[in-house]
Length: 332
Image (cartoon, rainbow, N blue to C red):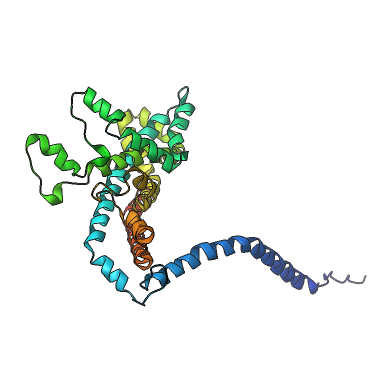
């Protein structure tokens, strides 16, 4: 009996080349789909950034002037106006970021309850965030007028109404003034006008922060809460030892976004005070606008914008190294 010849499949040598052609065809098609968006990003982002840096190296007003190199940057870093506006920006960030995160966390805790009508309240808290910042700031400017609702409530309680958005004195100095205490200049704090803008910003940012916190809370396993309640843990202990630690990554995300937003804030400040009174609400972002579009110092304003970018980038990296590392350590 003859042995059968083992089956040997024929090799299709054209198959690898076909696969390569399909790969390059698919890759080319993908790049063609990306190309329109890439062109828009290249023109309106990367080219704009590069050209702004180019402008910052010149004494650029309406037209290009003399080449200054890094002189604009040196002048800004040695300017008292820049240091004052930077301090104002830091105060604004402190008075908006920390209170906003704290309030939104506890609001999210309340809205996470499975109660009747809770969807309506969640929508109610999110509505301010989808409102135009300019429109919201215009409404709050009316509320803070000397004949507005806040002044009326203040007088109804039997106290003389503050000037609100027209008050350049520091908030800490105003708080201790009835006790006859005079604070040194460095301890007077931000102006009452800046605190009023911060209140508006906290109200406006609640929608985004609360929604993000609610999303983070839904990812926490319910079994952890049930086990804690079976062990006799109180609601405060559950929040302290379960909810808050497991929400650290979410809190870190909100913190980074909020700090960046506070340093870039412009609309509400421009609409509510325009930088006044006595420039006590002029932040770095508003200073960039004034130098560029009010005084026409485009080179100076571009250098100022890049310094602001460097500050925001540094703060973001520090947050990633400090807060981000702690959040990752807690969550394994």
